[in-house]
Image (cartoon, rainbow, N blue to C red; front, side):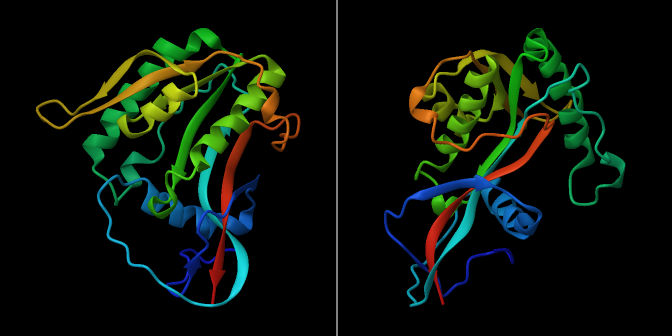
Length: 223
């Protein structure tokens, strides 16, 4: 695969099952397409398209898990001064608030946790179970290792995590001093549970620190 967006001439296959597989370097264009379109919660306008073609698998969602947490897992600066595509004050507020939240709520679990850093689904493919599949993959890893799952949930994702058994430890407020605008994320944890029905999901190789990206692919007809 690769190349980014699904072709405008694509015809989505109704009710086609999603498939879980490990992402590769060849999927970076598709992951970028998902991230750019799926990270924004603003309304989008879509139009139906029809075309005949072969059935292919196309990435529509991905997740990032940290499989080997170390004592220094709290992220540091990620080039804030070099970024031209973001509000520096907002980024600095995030860089200050989120590490403090990680330390307050998740440091207690140490290496006995598997954090979910990000899960993003393209808006055109939401509510089809992709995010749930990614979370179930993480649950399987946690069950095998006897670890807990941890994450920061946005308001949009909180409902899903509650349904999957996570509970709220507390909230983190990200706000620039003097601004009314703010972002509130919830620190959530899901302690180890044995789920036998997850045995069919692919396992992760031993010794991998960062599960860089997992994705779901959807059958589409592409002309």
